[in-house]
Image (tube, rainbow, N blue to C red):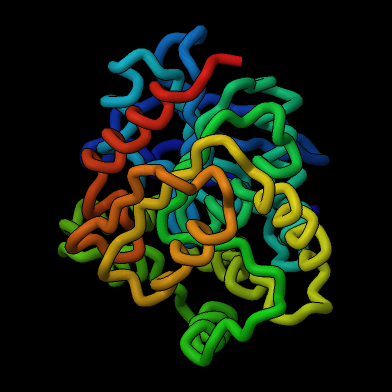
Length: 302
C-alpha cells in the first residue's frame, strides 16, 4: 500500500483552529490516524465523527465548549482525510477497512468506555456500526444528517449523480463542496482549511471513494454487517437523539426512520436545526455542543 502524508505546514495558521493532533497506528505499513484529544483524561468521552469530505476542523466550534464542561473530546480524522494518512489507491478504501481503522483507534488504542457518539454523514455510517458492534462501550448517541443504509432501499438519482461526480470529475473541489453543503457562506480562509489536507488530486482517493462505498444494493459487501448493526439498534434502549438540519436535501427524512425504529429515541428531545444544511456543525455548532452536553451529562456512568 502506497501511503501519502500531508505536510504539516499545510495545517499552519488555519482560521479558528488551535488544536494539536495526536497519532495512532491503525493499519499496515505504519498507517497513522490523527485525532484531537481535549479535556480531562478522566472525563466522560465524547466521540465526534466527521464525514465526506471534511475533517475534524468541522468541529472547531464544538470541541472547546464540550472540553470546558469536563468531557473528554475525541475527534478523529478518518483515514484519507485531515491530518491522517492517505492511501494512494482508491481500492485501498472499503467500508470494512474504515471500520477496522476506526475500531482500532477507539478500542485498541484508546480503550474508550461510556462513550457518547456524535456522528454526521459518514460519521454516522461508521459510528452507528461501531456503536452496535461495541455496544457495551457506548452510553448514548446523537445523530445529525446521517443514516445507516443496508442496500435495501433506492438511494435516489441525486445520490447516483453525486457518486458519479466524485469518481469522475477531473478536480474534486473539497472546500467548495463543503461550502455548498452549508447554510451560510464559509469565508475563503475556512474553505482553504478544508482544502488543506489535499496538496493535489493524488491525496483525494479516499474522499472520492466514499460515495461509492454507501451500500446501494442488497448484495453490497457492507450490507450484511449493516443489517446486523440494525438488529442491535432495533433493541437499543440507551439515549438516542436526532439533531438534523432543516436545509439538508441529502438526509431529509432519515431522522424519522431512526426515531421510529430505535427504542432509545422514544421521549428524547430531538431537534430540527433551523437554517442548518448538510454540514450542521458549520451552521449550528454551538447548539449541537449544547445538545451533546445535555445527552452526555444525562447518561449513566458505566
